[in-house]
Amino acid sequence: MIKHSFQISASEVRRLDLYLRDKITEVSRAKIQKAIRDGQVKVNGLAGKPGQKLRAGDLVEISLEDKPPTIELEPQEIKLAIIYEDREILVLDKPSGLVVHPGAGISCGTLVNGLIFSYPEIKNVGSPLRPGIVHRLDKETSGLMVVARTERAYYSLRQQFEERAVNKTYLGLAAGRFRNKKGIIDLPVGRHPAERLKMSVSSRKPRTAITRYEVLKEFKHSTLLALKPLTGRTHQLRVHLAATGHPLLGDRRYGQGGEKKRKPVSRLFLHAFSLSFEHPLKKEWLEFKSPLPPALLEILEEEASGK
Image (cartoon, rainbow, N blue to C red; front, side, top):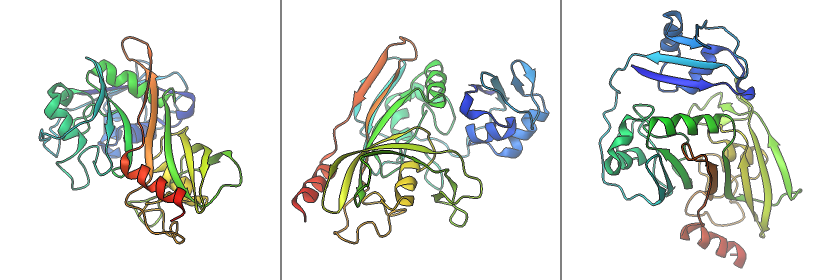
């Protein structure tokens, strides 16, 4: 039996079935509906109903039959840049090009495959297909990630992310210049109405998405930004910047037209630069930083030279 437990924050108030659909993405909505009807979902200890409106502070618990994953996870020896580890968590520096977990036709060569090779206990933590994973970075994005090694760390970190208690700052190089040195992009994001592999601010079912930005340095045709996502939507930073006319350099999915005045760059310029959160067991505040990788430093040097 797989069990999940969630504490509802003020920003997550909505129907029980829709909430669980978004939180447990590896399970179909039909299966979640069945679990609710079968009494496998409790809200504050009582059987929940599909259309029940959740309130801030509610405790939602769901028990699902433990069926083997459709993809058998294979441990693989993959070099991991671990910058901190203890018995509860790992903090690592993910390189660009590495997929975080299997899915969408990818069954091996992911960060998860490397994690369960080096840390076998992680295979039994959290979701069967995403063991230990409490947040993600796009394949093309590099930088800091925290991974849970135990169940208690997993649920503590998940709750911190849900309550927006984790501080994350990304460095991104965007096309063009910004009128304001600081600002907030508040545009709802959801699945693209026509291209299902993309996200969009013109979605039929958008969800709140907020990004804070600050200009760090201006170049002739681009701007280096500090980006702080206040929500955690898929591709949020990339979609927000593209929607405002300043796509990230190297963004092949959302950045069409962003490099008309310069030669294309080698990779997406988006790096998870800093990450801070409360340790799940020690309750100490931990802060980590990751310098820009050489490929991005080279792009900055080219921008500074005006090439």
